[in-house]
Amino acid sequence: MRLVRDVRVRAPGKINLSLTAGPPREDGYHPLETVFQAVSLYEEVLARPTGGEIAVETRGRGADRVPDDETNLAVRAAHLLRERTGVDGGVHLTITKQVPVAGGMAGGSADAAAALVACDDLWETGLSRAALSELGAELGADVPFALAGMSALGTDRGDVLTPVMSRGTYHWVLAVQDWGLSTPEVFAELDALRGDVAVAETQAIPRREGSAAGDVVAALLSADPLVLARALHNELEEAAIGLRPELADVLAAADRAGALAAVLSGSGPTVAALALDAPHAASVAGVMRGAEAAADVLVVTGPMPGARAVTAVG
Ligand SMILES: C[C@](O)(CO)[C@H](O)COP(=O)(O)OP(=O)(O)OC[C@H]1O[C@@H](n2ccc(N)nc2=O)[C@H](O)[C@@H]1O
Ligand SMILES: Nc1ncnc2c1ncn2[C@@H]1O[C@H](COP(=O)(O)OP(=O)(O)OP(=O)(O)O)[C@@H](O)[C@H]1O
Image (cartoon, rainbow, N blue to C red; front, side):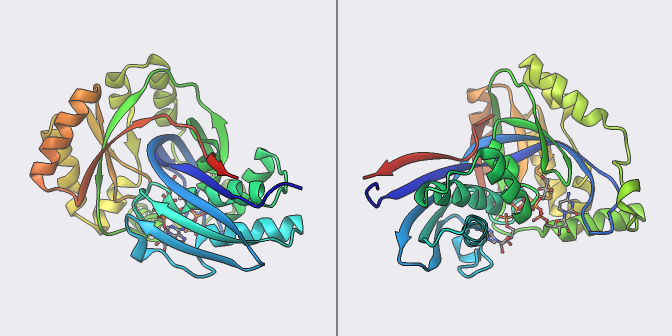
């Protein structure tokens, strides 16, 4: 029997270096081929034991737009873990957000991943990473990657992961908005643009045999940001711009600021602009701040590890 203690876990946000999507399946999901990179923008979840209730409070960027009830993804993660393992513990979760809410960077998924790791530790449920990842996939397509981190190819709903070897560190400038885009709405806009309707799951394969992911995988081995810049590609970009035309101005602002290339992350609205190195990233960020194209402009690096404990207080 060990002392009661707090567990603090952090999980990274992600950007999608490439994303291709097929027509919707009957369950509403779109088959994806996407290459994820975890970046140095983190969600932190502090888990404290309670008598039995599961509760949450959220601080940090966009906290006022995060639910504090049973729909919070971290709360759902704790309930799911408790149900499946039969433990009788409770937990109070304090989320500190850096990842923009509904920003296409999987902030809610990172909260769920961090909560799974934290509660597994707190309640001593002893699940393997693979078992946590299976639970995570029930909560959202992006949760397994928030657990895994680094760089990975995601297929199926984006939740079936194959690790991708990456050399070097990539320097990104993120143009972050203080408003969000709904992932289902962006996918629905993509379907409308293409005239796609739901098809049986067996027929639902990505529309284009993905050279986009292949190009990114090859680029990540090169360690050359100029090669990666040429490979960045996101099929949701046009749909997101259809919903929020000002995103075209953000992409243009990144270009004018001298970024090697810029791409929408996931379903947006965050735009990730690639730089050559740290000084170049600082310069691009400075120009983008001056252009007032975004609510906030951040410099991050990737790839970064997935959800893991940062301290455990006795
Ligand atoms: C767009 C991405 O961020 C790319 O990494 C993810 O695929 C989104 O992952 P996520 O937000 O964790 O997705 P979920 O919470 O599982 O799904 C939310 C909704 O997004 C849409 N969705 C999501 C993933 C996917 N492959 N196809 C979809 O059509 C569906 O309408 C789904 O009901
Ligand atoms: N812990 C949480 N943090 C953020 N959003 C949450 C959380 N729990 C539930 N939500 C809800 O989920 C929605 C999506 O939030 P999230 O920040 O994960 O979007 P996203 O980064 O665009 O996701 P993705 O990139 O996975 O599509 C929000 O609008 C919010 O209402």
